[in-house]
Image (tube, rainbow, N blue to C red; front, side):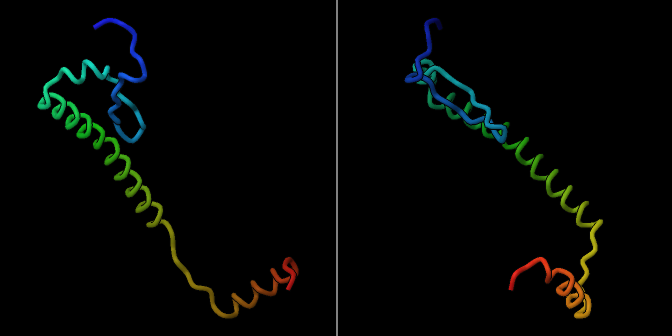
Amino acid sequence: MSGAISPNTVTGLNLGYVSSLLLVNQRAWDRFSRSVQATVKHTVREISDKPTKAMAAEGQDLTRKLASQMTETMPSEADVEDAEQKIKPYYDD
């Protein structure tokens, strides 16, 4: 295929989490059978899902690791009162 690609004749297929885009000449795309178009779209979606799922799993793993290093504590009433007294001068009533 030769010739310039005009913006009006381009089809975009999203490639995934990083917002990559596969640009295809619309006339060339339209010449593919519906079956080939479906296969290409399915393959792009399948490929796109892998890094997205990997990044989500990595985020969940990191969250679990960080959470395992934290300890949740509740202050006593005396600690709350002490903190309120210390911070009171910095706020107007």
